[in-house]
Image (cartoon, rainbow, N blue to C red; front, side, top):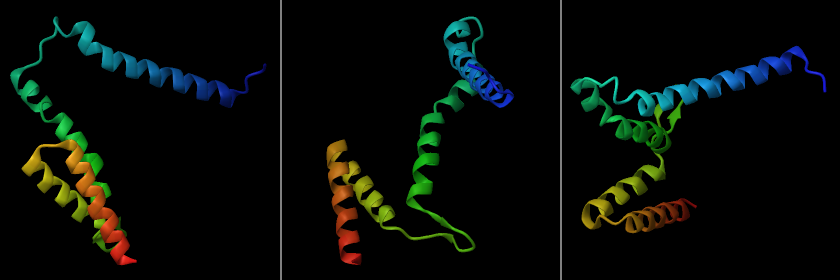
Length: 111
């Protein structure tokens, strides 16, 4: 099997990216006791999961149209209903059922 220069480049890039990912993720487990984080950084890291979830969900609920800004979508209404159901019941299953029922109903009504 002969490697062309482009294949070597691709495989070395994959290997280096995997190595960087392992080092950055394992760094906290290996050196966590020896390099304590300041309190300000610890407080800021508590908000990382919420920020990541927001970054994933908001673009899906408010799709951006070029030149027009965010566009209305039925998913936004279904998500708001899901939030209201969660605040009332605290049940993940009820959120999924209510959100999907509202989404399907709105799509059916829109035709």
